[in-house]
Image (cartoon, rainbow, N blue to C red; front, top):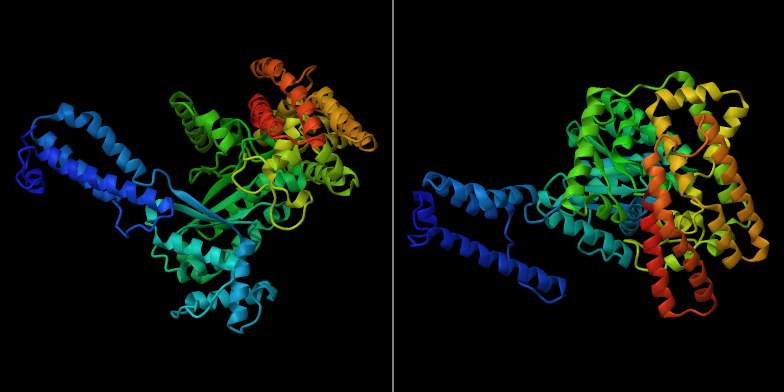
Length: 582
């Protein structure tokens, strides 16, 4: 192909094969970039070459495309080249925008060490007003805060190094900086200050993540304080993103109380942002499992508060669900179609706002379920010991199944355990405890108080409540008291087994309660396809549970590598069978 237009001829410097000439140069630069990146990943001292950008690739490809169009070769232009142009525009050279995520306590540690070195006092010991005053003063100042003479400790240096990496990236490489365990306005202002000190040349969205029950209830207060700050309000320029945590809130308070706290937090945040003329995008930190907020995508979206999807949606898909939802082209298209249709439907047909009577009853249910959940999790003296014997929690910590350590720093109780191994461990022994504990007891109390008709009315007319009941039915259908009892018999000391018996008895009572509200004789009576699918998978999953219990028993008596590998296989098989409860 030798015919081209003038711009391509100039770029090819008169080459007889102009298209090959410019594309060959682009290909060689891409190869050199790849070698430099691989050398850096291998730890070799690489050159400080400037890598290709999205614009570099786009300009060369677009030059060829327009030349082909101008020279009558539209069929070639609109083939593979047009597909490549679309990929270059969609994905750039980074493929995806990466989020950076760090715990708020790590930022506090940085500022505490810094202010102590500067002899300004201990930032960690200051109250919220003092912290915010200091941060506002520094954000308004033109002088740098970090001194080249300061030699921070290892932990602080790691956090600062992360900010330095962020500052070196182009804007299109990053999506947001997420603050885990955000509890107050200073947590957000601190990140803005550290980004500025690192020399970040662009405004990276800083997203507070409200995770625990208390944090969700205080989300409105925190965002109100931020939007009342003139510097912050001017910085965000009318656009704010807030992340709602599902995993840790459910681990903290149980699924029913957490779901209501998440619903309320979204309503309150929408109201605060509307009052300040700010557009709010809600970022849902859902996990794949029901105990971590997981639910069928369309149902979950349509059960959100009215107006919560007006600015679109940002949502996490956890590693164990990416393959299930996006692993094949047809699955990915279906998943994205479900999200798109649900968002359009929610915005075109606003979901009903709950009646005041429903809200009042939901408050009672949330309080009752939280109290029952915490009574078992926190106040039962044998619970932690039972948990470690009855589930493979000990073995999970040593296996490469998580993206982060199984526990946060400090302590070995339930509070320090991350949500993933907490949920995963209970799904493996088929008790599914975190996905139902407390909810049934609260519903039974409401029935005993004479609220049966109101509960049925809520289930029929309020998508949020209907989804909660539907998810409980699915969990109950996948739970298996017989297999849980088998784990106890194989792994749990005799003196701890009464706790397991009590939990299984509670499960049976809760199943009866939900069936009484729904008026059905069997679980999932309205979803026969799902019920049959679970029954079919159980044929394969149940033997894996029996095998796993035997392997765990042997491994705990005499650890062996071969047994560890076999246990890991059973983990994967049971999780695949449990799907959104595993």
